[in-house]
Image (tube, rainbow, N blue to C red):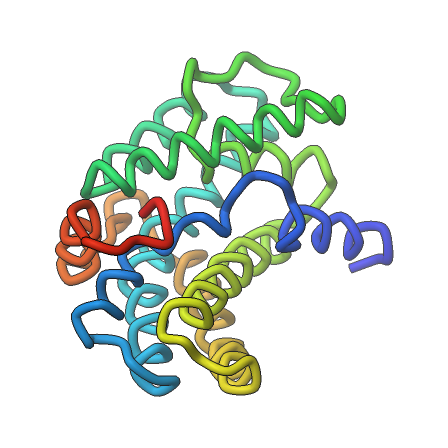
Length: 221
């Protein structure tokens, strides 16, 4: 990766990107509230499971196909994979997060004159808009998928630091432990056929449902 591509990746995946990703915990806040996640070890277990059975088998392979269809400027195929991602969000909160982040990233790209050069769906989700942005910024598949997964991991770790709470040194240890997991997830995503795509995270879905009525909430999901 050359310096320009690396800087573009850091821009797209950095925590300062103004799309509001910090406001979401994806069920982690409820898992903390109910004692499922309470320290660094249980946080790592939660994140590793979500990555292996969720992102590696749904978000990342769909991101790969969304990038392919964006490169080909094929709006029908792009919309098909975007619909699959959105249909796979199992709760109202997770579905709304997908739309909200997608809307925010689309607005940002429009403002930076980085909008895709083909018609987008009426309400593209976050994975779809990340794919389109990564193409416009000249990133290759490995960089885009790795950056997407790392950005997710950073957001999860930041949410845990606030909600458990967990010290920054312990959070960094968890993030470093996720490096090999992310590498493996990207490799898995690249091997899946279309028919094999689909995540299964019933525990996360239940946590997200519980969060909708949680008494004290720091996050939107």
